[in-house]
Image (cartoon, rainbow, N blue to C red; front, side):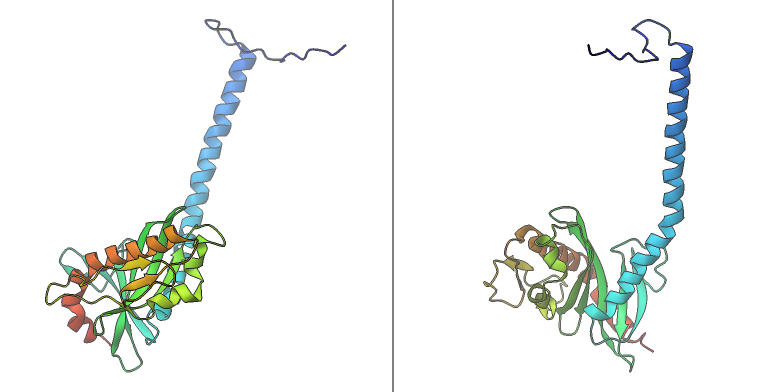
Length: 235
């Protein structure tokens, strides 16, 4: 006959004071929970500098990919009053990099942008040439998009070719885009400001287009008045 197993330390019934064993068990569990929390916080504090350093290294490596004619760079940060050559403390999206060639000529700037993708937030770095008024490259810094589909935004050569010379012209002296950055169905691109999307990864493709347009609309009015200043800062 099967035996019925009973808990060695029965839980107290409603209104009944917990037994000594129950109190001990609750104290132990509370201690374990507190210790686990302290360990998580401690590990986060220990690893955060390394994570930040890895992210910075990833950005540094990508700068000359999105501005391919450059060989040297200077970091800046956007401020309420303009731009600052000391971007210390500037959060993601508020930093940018002026990129120069060997002769010290400004070849473009590298800017950060982020937006919601299909799975999670996507972070990108893209290049912008203020003279030709084009995007000169784009690379994905962080993405959790679906493997085999959405993650193609980071490695599909046909998709990435969209950003080799994507038109981002401004109208007159307004510093506002003349045309929006539009993502079209794969194979349907007809205009230089359009992005040829990835078949089967429409949401991820559109996410890149949306964050790129939002970033350009927000940053070009803040950036373009300082292009002459940036041009004169090359060594």
